[in-house]
Length: 229
Image (cartoon, rainbow, N blue to C red; front, side):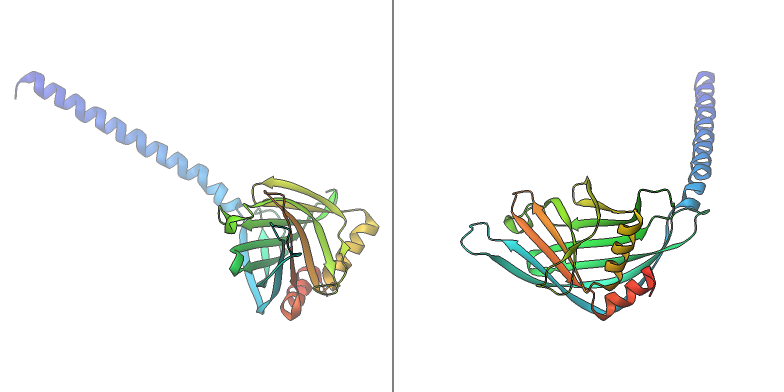
């Protein structure tokens, strides 16, 4: 190999070494910046309670020939111990996983307390829907949540929780419960004592539905842990 070839090879080696060193520095910086994020990330411990309880999905008949349809499902109750930041006190949230198999309908409800007393919402209820793209060929997804009722039974009249509903993203809604003293006390009492949840839905095709689910023994146990006895 001539002198030019040796020099070019030497330059290539130095450039490769320099590139490797730079890559090493970049990786080190990424690790250093990632570490605090992992330390501050959510730490969740989930506990499940008892056997599944009953859920029911009521839907308008798209043809409007009949009143509607009733689909049976289940709900599994959990509590989650969540610590969102290292400096933050751990808190307990109530979680319900609802599944209606014959409609491919899945929903998760998470209720957690807002620790900051100045927050305009005492509690936040997050509703996330996991639905197939065609959703049985009729629904097409959830476009709106009309509110949350607490009911004495599947068919009974309900009492609405005081708060406001906001759509965060497709399939994700947030209900902020009122922090006004009287309304906060009433909401908390309903969350603790009412046997059934009932949530009004509007699909993308504007047909309406209601998902209702019971606490049962499992839900009352989880609620007692999350909200106090």
